[in-house]
Amino acid sequence: GGWCAEAAALLAADTVLILDVTAGAGPSAETPPDQDARRMAAMPAERRPLFLAARRVARMALAAATGCDPACLLIDAPGDTRPRCTGLLCDGPQAAAVREYGIGFSYARNRALVAIARGLQVGVDLEALPQPGGRRRRRDAIREAYFADMPDGIGTTTAEEFLAAWTRHEAFLKACGDGITLPAERRDPAAEGYTVHAVDAGTGYVAAVAAKASSFRYGILPASPAPASQPTGPKDAPALP
Image (cartoon, rainbow, N blue to C red):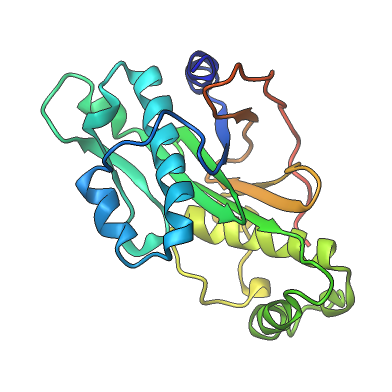
């Protein structure tokens, strides 16, 4: 698709690329690479098309940026925390260049965000705003586990404010490569060398992206075979709650 050239240009400009993917985006259905098939085995069937679409457009963007064959890209995700493009399935001159890229994935309903950055550890999180009463139990569980001691009353905020705080927290931990195990107030991204941006994910969604850098620019690009719109950005990172 035409978006691949724009993706390569953003990555060449040291901009964190965020690909906005919907179920069924990317090229026509194909047999998934073995690495993706193994991960799909433990995944609900309804999630698999979106997972494949996200992985496919990630390979397409990296191929456009490095000149390698997308079918040869190996995306590794140890612990499901911070995927990286670890190299090629076959030897080639682009192998070293490919390993410079960090990748992050997040899924919500029928959308996925894929963050790609050259030379940076990167994490992204996307959450769908709940339908009335739809996810209150999950929200209460997250608040109890991660925000119980927050002094700013996060437990009484709106769902959108709550998820804004949560997505920034989760994007940061994904960029670190850590599991979601520590209360939010015990980690200061800036103190650990990370910057977090709130991402405008459109109506009904909340998102954030994080990278290990004192500052960074990002651009959002719809990833589909249709002509892509102009990416947004650069953006400024807001203060964390």
